[in-house]
Amino acid sequence: MVIDCFVALSSPCSYMGHPRFEALATRYQATVHHQLIQMGKVFAVSGGLPVKERPQQRQAYRFQELRRWADLLGLALNLEPRHFPVAEAEAARVVIAAVRRGERPGPLIGAFQRAVWAEQRNIADPETIRAVVREAGYAAAALLAAAAHPAVQAEYDATTAAAIERQVFGVPTYAFGSELYWGQHRLDFVERRLRAG
Image: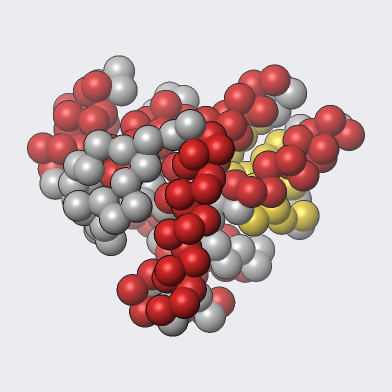
């Protein structure tokens, strides 16, 4: 069973879904391809809007929904974190570099997401990135050096283009071939799909 998991590091729904998705993938022995994508490019072609550009009633409801889910899942979540929105490209390239080096990206993705939503850290800051990588148990110097290679940015761009081609419009999106499940609130359906084999 192969799942393409399209995520962004500064997405609260990606953050809330990550621990449960990782647990499901382990339980059902699924192969996961974590795909970091650039949501600005996705929004530009899918009709999505950054949070601050959405109508006021949608912004207000978003806070209610995030609070409900954080309470239900028992997750620490700052509704208005100090560093959001945040330029996540450098941190995303570090994750991509980890994948290219054959390392498991799941723990690193989770660490960056917690940094934004639970710890109020700035993942656009190089020293914060270095600290998060090190705290997550990865070789920070090696990963940051690898992340600077042009091939990593090229992969980030290609993955984003592939997500758009596959009709992804938001994160997290869990994809089984052409079958998409958008949002951490669809993980029950993901589990049903995994159970079916």
